[in-house]
Amino acid sequence: MAEQNGGAAPESANAAPRLSVLAQYTKDFSFENPNAPRSFAPQQQAPNISIQVNVNARQLGPTDYEAVLVLEGGAGEGQNTLFKFELNYAGVFRIENIPADQLQRVIMVEGPRLLFPFARQIIAEAVRSGGYPPLYVDPIDFNALFFQRVAGANAAAAPTAGVA
Image (cartoon, rainbow, N blue to C red; front, side, top):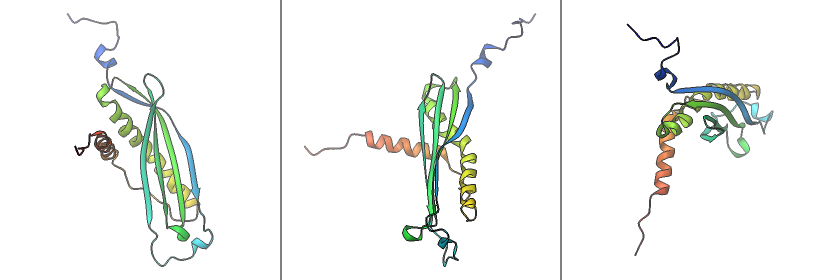
């Protein structure tokens, strides 16, 4: 005869890894169109578009973390700047039953991966509202970005050979 537990979920189900999005929001946003309307004149060549990406995180409680996706960029340079933007798009995540050695990767990779489509849309709409064709930021490999950041931190922490 099979044992019954009164309809309660098996204990292993309670220990399943879980990542929940509690909130997401624009923490800070800036769009500059410094040369409008002069910048709307036909361009001789396509402007140079640059985008920088960063991810920051902090713990808010025992299981709650804030991840902030920072996207900065623009088109053109110097006096020929068409537009510039900076977006800090954040989310609060509840992370449960994740091994401690994987926690940082989940926060710095999976959190931003979930936030990115929304941040991408904010930038596209702001650029379009600024009078230009929408700028759709290419997908970002947050896993590679995380490992690049870890490698940089390890290189900075490595002892350097000194001259005796």
